[in-house]
Each structure stands twice: as structure tokens, then as C-alpha cells.
Amino acid sequence: MQKLSHCALSMLRPKKGSALVGVIVLSTIMAIVGVGLLRVASSAVNNEVAALEECQAFWAAESGLHLAAKRCASGSPPNAGDTVLGPISIGTMSVIALVLPDAHSNAFPITLRTYAFVDPSLSAAAFRKALKATVLKEAGGDINIKNWIEEEAY
Image (cartoon, rainbow, N blue to C red; front, side, top):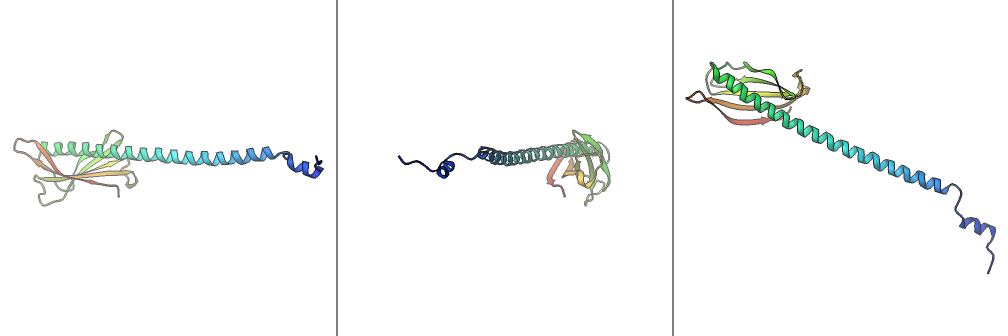
């Protein structure tokens, strides 16, 4: 057998510190993957929170519409532009209801619009949902809500 030269032997042996370089590279790759997974998870959570807030805003606006319709039907019809409800707190939302101007001012049917806000400031940034509907007063005094239109945040 032929003897290997000293130079050839040194090339076959692992270099000192090469394992450290491998561990650093692997740790860096794992850290990058971990940060990416955290971003994806936080994005998913934010989307779920936004969807829940959207549902809460719809339910609050719907409840406000029913309360405002009952209030309108219990007395004389309100005038166009009157605030018939609110701001009141329904769940985590603040709700306000207005009578919209239409051809039947101060008589039924009336058109109501409710606005749901995420906080009591009623600022444009806090606006989440609006519902618009026509309210009819039946012969027995009952109310009938028709022609629902859901409106998104502006």
C-alpha cells in the first residue's frame, strides 16, 4: 500500500470548526422559517378577529334597526333626519339610527339607517357597518321591516 502524503491526509480530515459553521447555518435557516410561521399565524389571527368584528357590527346594526323601528312605531312618525336611537351600546359596538329623507316624510313607511361603530367616539375610523331598511306600520300596530340593504365601511 502506498502511503498517503501529509497533504492528502489533511484534506480527508474534517476541518476544525466546520461543525460550528454547519450549526450556525442550520440555526439561521430555522430562525427564518420560525419568523415566517409567526407572521402567517399572526395574519390568520388578525383575519379571524376582523371577521368576528364584522359579524358583531352586523348584529349590533340589526339590533339597532329593530329597536329604532319599535321606537318609531310606538309614537308618531319621526321627521327626516331625526335621530331615533342612540348612540347606545349593543355588545361591544355603539349604534345610532337615523330617519332618512324620502317621499313619505313624517308618515309611514319610513326609511331607517343604523350605523355600528367599534367605539363610542362615533368617528369615521371606528365605523364598521350600516343597515338600511324600510319600516311599515301594520294595521294592528305591528312593525314590518322590509328591503334590507347592508352597507360596508366607507
